[in-house]
Image (tube, rainbow, N blue to C red; front, side, top):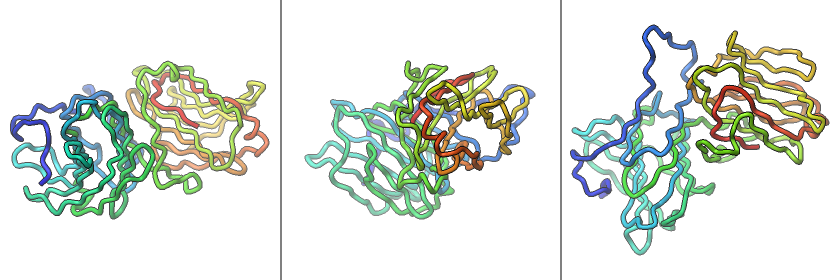
Length: 337
């Protein structure tokens, strides 16, 4: 039977908790649909770690876990997607992901806890994790099952035994060093989609992501290529731009968030502005994800996993782009092209 590791009785664990940001007195809620709001990533949480999943789980949601298996790991660790966070009675666990290292044949056990009783175990051999090595695990939640990839390779899928809508808590326990936990939506672009979304790791305070940030595009851009920008808006934002530049350092297209009037717009090389009809997401201390998909005749935009239309651009101009530049009042966690 699956049991949490750590050597403590269930009622005596010391947990690390993550709570929603507390609003200041008089602050008003933003008129933003829930589907546009992404939970900020958590860096280096203390294990055992339990956090609320903002808005709960639904099909199309992805949880990304970055960490290291300690070199002296002798037992196991587990990731539980729970229906609540009480200690007594113990909450149901819709999906229990439990890598085990204490046998001669390391493996993963998956299960469901319902009404205090474990259901039938599912076992996957050939564990793709090694002691002393880092890893990136993606949990991708679909309509009927969850898929799990380890270091970019599909590892298992598990059919739900409890409704996904009941899950609102993530718990991490055992022999594991967690570097980051991220909460994302899948790639909304059919043209750039894969079985798993782009699971590029979050980086905290990386010199390569200092703003202003420049990212080379030596081969230009080709249809189907996706640019990813993830980060956090600073406390007192002034401006934020994502621009694409050619060999002459001209910017044929720029995405600009204006904090003064809370608008988002495309800016052409000649300064012409085309407003984007979408909720303004770039509020202080809010996490964001910008996706740009390049296609014949232009590029498509998605914010926080929600598609927001396209802007036109000829193919020759796309092929001549050589630099992605990001500037403004943001802290970057991931830039990839």
